[in-house]
Amino acid sequence: PAPLFPCPQNDSWGKQYSHALFKAMSHMLCIGYGQQAPEGMTDVWLTMLSMIVGATCYAMFIGHATALIQSLDSSRRQYQEKYKQVEQYMSFHKLPGDTRQRIHEYYEHRYQGKMFDEENILGELSEPLKEEIINFNCRNLVANMPLFANADPNFVTAMLTKLRFEVFQPGDFIIREGTVGKKMYFIQHGVVSILTKGNKETKLSDGSYFGEICLLTRGRRTASVRADTYCRLYSLSVDNFNEVLEEYPMMRRAFETVAMDRLDRIGEEQPLGP
Image 1: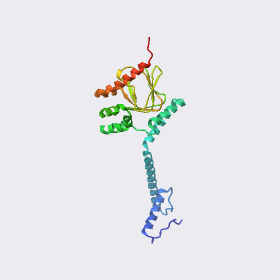
Image 2: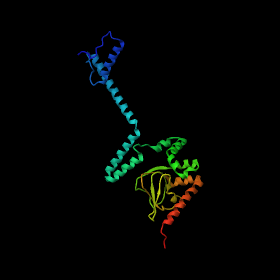
Image 3: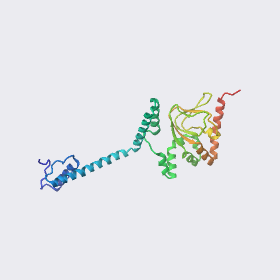
Image 4: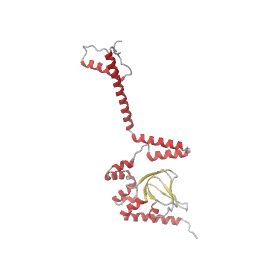
């Protein structure tokens, strides 16, 4: 058959090269032998070679394009892969529907569709960079918390580097009365209720902290704390709490003042025994 785009010998070099490029691409990128069938054995072998090279290049292009698209939002892809495992876990254990919904909502609020290995990332950075990132991430917490407003910047940095981010759902008991206290909490965002035996509730919100009483007295929890809304908190373990306060004894007094005030209020709410 006659070629679709004839290219006479007297055409310009631009037209001849364009025609040659078109023939080469039609052999390499099309499934088949292109617009014109090979006429001799040499043409047959060259056409097969060009088809193989073209198919290989096409496959490499598709592979690189797919990898590029996936790399554009790798954190979301990691989250989706992680949540698929969670779904399989819930299905394997045949968890009830309401529990599955709470787990789903927890993951949505905790990771917000993206997942990072934050500990590994921060662990690879130098200490100045790590402290700079942590101070930036916790800037709202520091701005809203009177305890940190006039504190030594070194104390604030030492405290922030030891905090651990946690999320609680409405109705969760963050602290239960009578248990051994191993953490205190700083509220970044949310509302919690402090519940005592007198059934009186005290609300705490952004910029407040709680749970420090038992860390100072080394006793058991004197009240329960319940999350009223979705709460984004930072927790501090008892070991890290004491480690930081050993370096900054003046801040221990600030914590003790708040703790004694809360103990006095709790004592007033409790009924007196005979």
